[in-house]
Image (tube, rainbow, N blue to C red; front, side, top):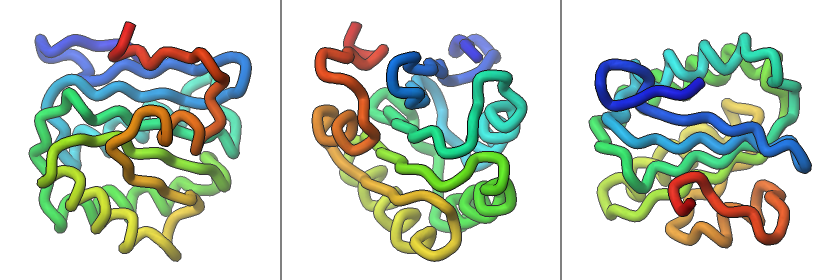
Length: 142
């Protein structure tokens, strides 16, 4: 699940083998529709096992989100929770607008999705939250 900004997928997905954490680095426009497409594709990925923690690195994303399409993404995620299982999710984001929107997502998702969510500006905090091993380097920092 690797793409480029030239019309392919706007993200890169890495399954960290030691801990089973899924690291998603978004590097292009992040829309509600694009996130739902990603989530559908992930649901049928052969390496996906229920309960795998996630780290979403949105630091390089062009956020084209609103509170309404965040709600639609949350609803799509909650419908697929049986496949994805209970998990921890870290959302790594630095810009103020995106940080605020993701905090809204976190608050609205609290009882609706099977994920404990952390929204942070710190890569170290995000990696520790989901259980990535010490010394792991995020794809965006390689």
